[in-house]
Length: 217
Image 1 (cartoon, helix red, strand yellow):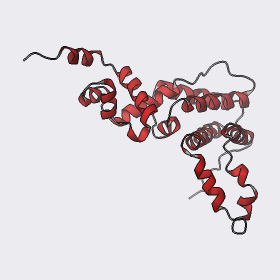
Image 2: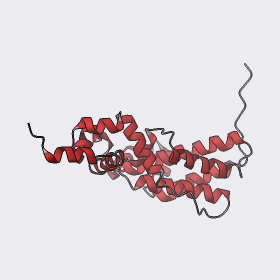
Image 3: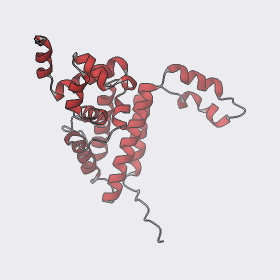
Image 4: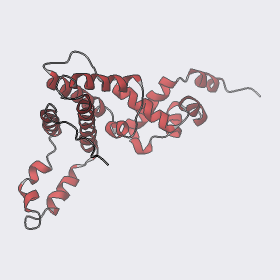
């Protein structure tokens, strides 16, 4: 039996980089909920086994995609003092995640121990050494900044405007007077301003906050 000429050529031409590129196409079109090896295979016009041969597991594919996003973050040419440099690194991370549909959800759901991810963490921690009183506080401040950025970008990418409208309708002044008094700021969709505010708050406390020692057992 004669093999279909195009099928062999297509399979031979598939590389791991092409699989990851195709996965980003699927992500952008369908979102992370519909990202699968089968969908990537359909995008590449190959069998699912071909995709699985390259990625081994879906978790590894997600990790490679997260690593790719982290690789988009420029770690050089940072402005100002240590606070400004750290804020700029997190700002660049935010922009890298925003360039991809569900980018923050993708990064948050993985923990790739890969060069780009490690290089970003190394850069943030090294800059924080200049302002934090201990190495431990620098490490934990870096996590606080990372978690805050992930959480806010996830909200930015996932929260439709109608949910904010529902919140406005649900916050009754008599039952929730505090929330009602700050409601417009509470549901603000000015994510850039909220991001800058949160990063500044964390960094302001970094030079004076030391992790509490464990109580003696």
